[in-house]
Image (cartoon, rainbow, N blue to C red; front, side, top):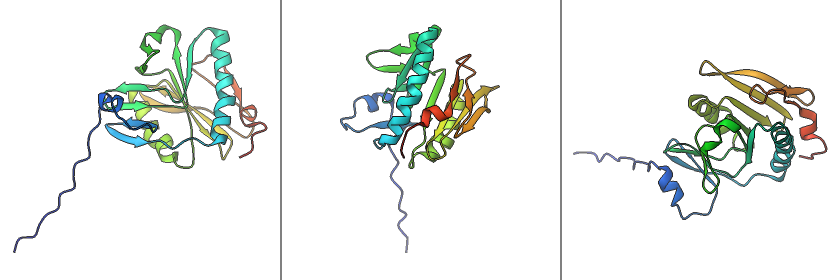
Length: 192
C-alpha cells in the first residue's frame, strides 16, 4: 500500500510590488521575500528613539551631512527586501536614493536598530548579516535592558566592533565624523 506524502505548501515569495499593494494596515518588513509582521514598539523603545534620534538629528543638521529618518520609513534594499529601521542616515552626496513620497531606494550609510524583547534574533543576527551583505557602512545596535549601544563598522565587507558603551561612556561614529554619544544621556530619566 502506498503512503501519501504530504508536501508543505510553498510559502509565497513576496516582492516590493506585492508589499506595496498589500491591503493589510499593519506594520511589516519584507526580509528576503518573507513578509514579517512588526509589533508596535513600546513607549520605552520610543523614548530611547526620541533621545538618540534627537542627538543624531542635531549633529547631522548642524553639520550639513545629509538626512536622518525615523521608523516607520521603507528602506528598499532590493526587490525582495524592505526594512523599517529605527533610524536611517543618508549622506548628502547620496540623497538621490530618497523618494520623499515612497521611501528610500538603496543602501543607507548608517542604520540604528533598538532591540526589543521580540526582536533580538532579528536585529542582532538576521539584520546584522543582511546589513553587512548589502553594505550598510555603519550599524548601531541599542540594547535597552542593558542600557548599551554597539557601533559596528563595515571593513572589507565584514562588520567590526568599532565602539561600545554600557550604562555610561561614549560611543563614536566612523560615518558621522566627530560624533560622540554619551550613552548615559540616551537613557537618562527613562523608566523601563
